[in-house]
Image (cartoon, rainbow, N blue to C red; front, side, top):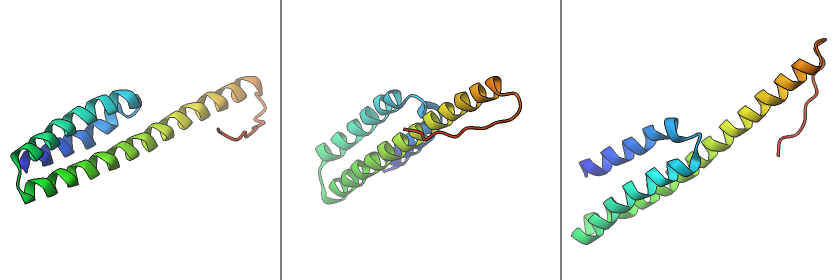
Length: 101
């Protein structure tokens, strides 16, 4: 159980460093959880089956939160380049807003 808590903590902490590259985050997250889940299922027992199910759910939550974090970073970078180009083109302070896709 301690190893599961350590893996969950490392996966949560890695979101801040690998969040800007979502595929790298997924490539880090899935193997770390997959090996623990497979070891728990191999060991057997009701508590281990329940813990592996909880770890599988946590992996899903981490994937969804990682993707949301990636989208937020991508939109912030897009807005920064948009406002920088507007500022460079219009020195008198005219601001034009556009809808992000």
